[in-house]
Amino acid sequence: MTTDKRKIRLATAWLGGCSGCHMSFLDLDELLIELAGRVDLVYGPLVDAKQFPEEVDLTLVEGAVTNVDNLQLARIIRSNSRVVVGFGDCAVTGNVTSMRNRIPVRDLLTAVYRQARAPIGEEALKDLPALLQQALPLHQAIAVDVCLPGCPPSPERIAAVVTALLDGEPVALDAAMRTFG
Ligand code: SF4
Image 1 (cartoon, rainbow, N blue to C red):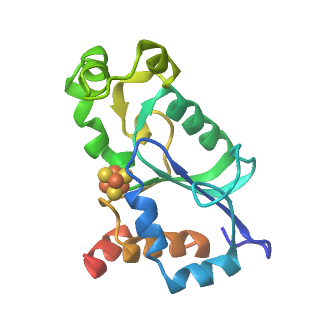
Image 2 (image 1 turned 90 degrees about the vertical axis):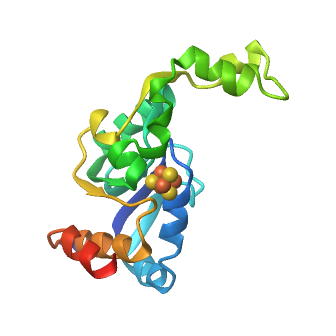
C-alpha cells in the first residue's frame, strides 16, 4: 500500500454498531499523530463528509449490515475501496447487533417502538431505514479483505493491523492477538 509518496486515503464507516470500535480507534492516542502524517482521513464519523468518496485505499467498517441504508453504503464502500477491513466483532460475526435475528422484524419494531413508554407513531416509523430480515456480518453483504476481531478490538490490535496494511506487510493478526491479548 506504500508504493508511492502520496498519503493513503483512509476511511472509516459506522454501520450497525455501538461506536465502541471507533472509540477504540481514538484510543490509538499518539499513534494518531503518526497516522496523520501518513493518511488522509476522507470519510467517517470523525470527518464532515456526506458522501463516501471514490478511490479510497483502506476502509475500516464497524458494525453489522442491519438495514437498507447499511447495505447500500457497504456496497458503495466495496466498489470505491481497495482494501476493506471488517472492524470489530459486529462486522466480523454479527455479534451484538445480530442478537435480534431470532425475532421477526415486525415483533421487534413493536417491542422497541410501538410498546415503548413514549411510543413512536406509524408515520415516524416509516421514516426509519427498513431493517433487513437478518443483521448480517459484513462478509455476507460484500467481499471483505481483512477481519479485525474484538469487541472492541484493542487499540494495540488496531495499530498492529493498520500499520501492517499501511506498510504493505502481511497482517499477522495471530501475532497481534498473542502480543496484545
Ligand atoms: Fe460495539 Fe463491540 Fe460491536 Fe464494536 S464490536 S460496534 S464495540 S458491540
